[in-house]
Length: 378
Image (cartoon, rainbow, N blue to C red; front, side, top):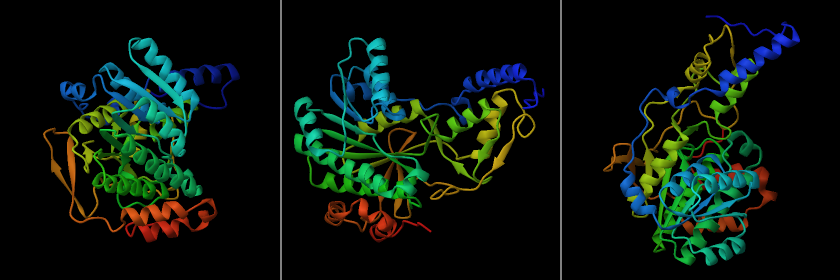
């Protein structure tokens, strides 16, 4: 069936067509785009890990953070949410109050880069488990604002980790990304530095510091799927950076659930990788989203190539050359084993973080290259 959406139509007909497109696009099922069964969890073990515990989530109003909030609330956790975006925080707080009225929840607008503020909050609330999901994640934006990437993604992680250690948090879980592996972007490099910081902190602390690393979360804020969805609503075209571009994908629910599962088995100093199946061509994703709307790609809605953005790779990998994957008791969760300790040590990293500032913006990529030999900013 062919449906044409031409701008030459009368204003009323064009308006009706736009409304139809908007409704069709809004009903896209992201889970079906993955062409695989969703991952299953050991809810009994997760509930044992979470129930009755005081759990802090940074970035609690974001896509991953808010889904962690939902799942933890459903399992009887007591929640502290740290978030700079007051709208996101208000939305998830109102949702939890409505859906889980008996849940203990405190949402605070606060800045993870302000150590005194975080220490005051933690000293009062005394969280037992911390999920650190707050981060700047847009690759192209962080290429233009590298200092902000370091300030939020690395210094913010340092502060959150140090305060967690100081007040005696039991478990600290950093939410990381496959873009930290052989990074080609500032965002990926800062997430790699955050991983190094957390793994080194684990050696010095009674707190268990673990990392969960996964790929693109389909339907999360700023994800390519949401961009395509909005472009379909407008009648296209869908803008593709490269026909060979591919990514690992998982749903928001999977990402949060498997993060909880991995956290429940972490013993400190471990990186967990979540099984997302085979990588998906972004071109195929775009075509399938159009088809879900009962439209024909390139005929009803076009797909155009616009070129890769700065810092983007054609494909991502889940582990580096000095890392190997080993099985855990759970099919969909693998543990990374590092063959050798990374060259950047905690003292070197902390010295860098203590001296770098906005004035270094033009030189930050060079400095990151000195800290991370595997960082390729060409």
